[in-house]
Image (cartoon, rainbow, N blue to C red; front, side, top):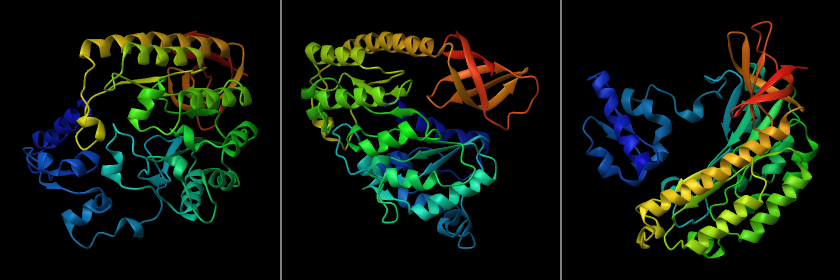
Length: 366
């Protein structure tokens, strides 16, 4: 796949820059195909995922502390937004995905450790915390029960300005989570919910745990409960056996739902997945054509959403300032620019949207 190809290029690059460098490969690709990775010229060591946290120990010996002995992360290169992993692994068995093979079953990080790490980041000036994981909806800890319970505890932290969650499976979204987002202003009004297909037949072949009507009902319920929410999704084209009729159902559902953006993927076979044994019978040209159809719809959805924000007040967390223009992200995942009379971007900015420049909102300070 394209991702695997880019990984191979990345592994060869360090030796070209520094022939004396020690190159260690780890992560999903290395876990799944260690022999292939190990045969790449310049790779000195291949480590499975459960060893990658202590790479330094493999290079320098036992004088380096284990990851579990290190203090929580307190800074990121992005000085305003911090990403906190709350879970790893997945209990799902989607037929096209190798994540479960590479990462194993879902394992949650204890809530007290997450809370402690977030407190440290907030003390260091971070304005937005993003909760991430392979399948964050599976989060469970005895201290807080589930993801909504964890979020409620995070909301008790003094100084927290904005909390955002990464992609979450539709089957893991409960009314408790929707109500929490609707009623808590610090909980970013943005959800990315994978859809994959609008055909029930294809969803079943994919091993997805919902029907197209389930997905539609969820998205409509969320959009009605939370006005102006940023709603994203993933859609795959060209899955084995996808007919014109199947794709037409996907198009119909995407057109109907109030997405504000969309990630579109073209199916490619991956070893060690059930779908790999299925006949990849959708011609590449057909996949490209279907991709373009959805891309056109996606662009129209983006236009509709951004235009709906013109005249509204939003709050952005500044990310950068260039020539007196601040750029940042709103709670509903819209990027905006606003002129600023000083270079201080340490605080959130309240703005009024006055126009657009392609996919970026143009605004003025309130």
